[in-house]
Length: 115
Ligand SMILES: [Zn+2]
Image 1 (tube, rainbow, N blue to C red):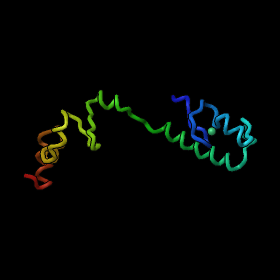
Image 2 (cartoon, rainbow, N blue to C red; image 1 turned 90 degrees about the vertical axis):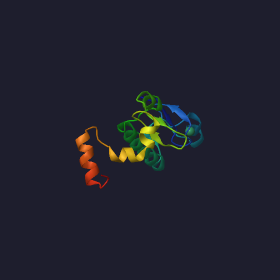
Image 3 (cartoon, rainbow, N blue to C red; image 1 turned 45 degrees about the vertical axis):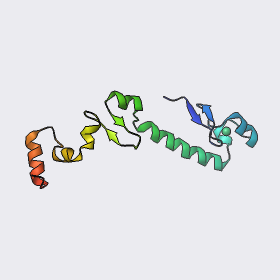
Image 4 (cartoon, rainbow, N blue to C red; image 1 turned 90 degrees about the horizontal axis):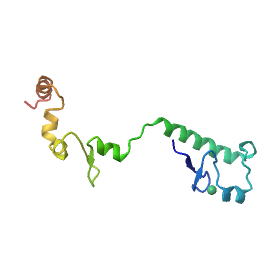
């Protein structure tokens, strides 16, 4: 779990559980107590809290993990996996054999009018 977040006001990185950096707190005369904050800051805080909770729920995959799994991304943002770039660059082949099972592929090609 990341122990840093962005300051609500200036977006500088600060250590959790703080929501405001020292300079913003001093500049706006804000205390550490959430209950003492003005309404606009509480609204801002609620919004960011919701975003943080949402982010925590969404699984993320690092580029290293993708690379380990054999996924490649070229400079144009194209994604390749399963045997290197050719596997996906050959779109006709992919379209004609999207399943592991040969029978399923034959039925798929027939139904798609490719055979
Ligand atoms: Zn700040």
